[in-house]
Image 1 (tube, one colour):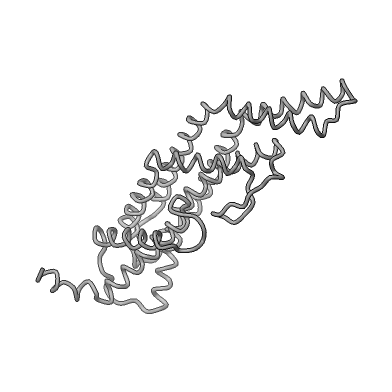
Image 2 (cartoon, rainbow, N blue to C red):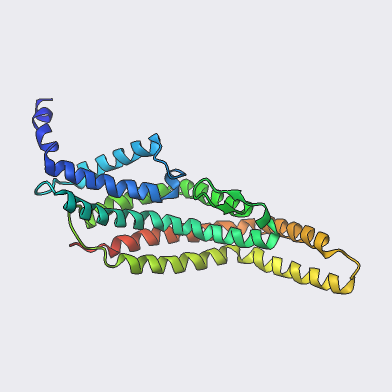
Length: 266
């Protein structure tokens, strides 16, 4: 008990407080950017507790005080670097969820469900019902494979590869994010490809029916057939969702490793 009390002034030194503040900045940015840790833009109590706990564990595990207390300008420059790194880590998961949403929105557009959008509480924008369904399934599966542990481990590793209180070492982040964006977008198209192909065949069938039987009201019949065909396709191709999800989860792991590899020591 006495040694802990004696070390208290060292823990509360200006350099230690500044370093821990930078740990808080990087951690809070990643938690805010990653959709798995909560929804909405507000910092609710559970997110604040998570940020403080992760920052404390990271600092006690690999952190060290700054050589001297930074000025307000220096702290702002250091904090900007921490925000960039935290956003890069959280953006990897955002790209994966974006891929799922792109596939769901494409299916919803073909079904005609774009007229039945719902407001996504996470982003505040309208999303088709199918996109919300796929997004929920993706996040549930991500938790089931302990994907949140990948993010936390990547956060801890980032403090070892890019210690706080330094400038630079993030020049390769933009190229890494650009590469991940292209890969995740193509994964989203592949994710929805089987249903989209069947929907194309349904559209061709509706067009042929309209030419063969002009008396049929295609506005009513076609809308019903498209919804029925899409629902049957989603049910028939449901077993194929598991490999597609595994590919996306593997993309998240690869993306986190890519971001970590792009962090160069200053």
